[in-house]
Image 1 (cartoon, rainbow, N blue to C red):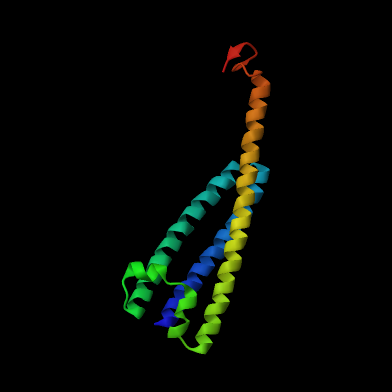
Image 2: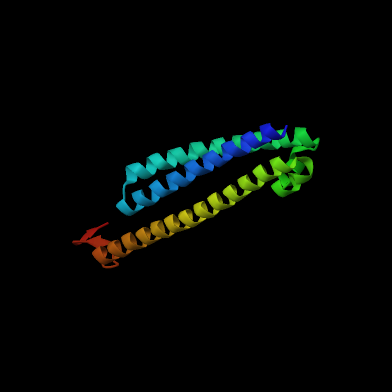
Length: 145
């Protein structure tokens, strides 16, 4: 049962790699103000998130069947707790995956925080330009906006 569980973990890892790649593309699109690219990336990210949720759900099903526990309990089990159920070789593979997940999630967190900062800065700049153009009166060239 562990090989099937591991397969789903690796699939989730691939999906996270793809999310990371898309986040890097998203950062470039934000800097270039490429709205079409951002919309395309957003739709890809939505699909990947749906697939991640499905893969995670299936992983929990496998885990609950393997350990004879209910699904809610399987959601609370940490990867490190599985060590008592697997062989030493499998432990090494699981630890390698754990490190990969940690690295990927840290990279995603950093990149997404940077993207959020860039977007907020762009919104602020646009607001400042509008305020400058309207002189705070909601009028441009004596025409109400």
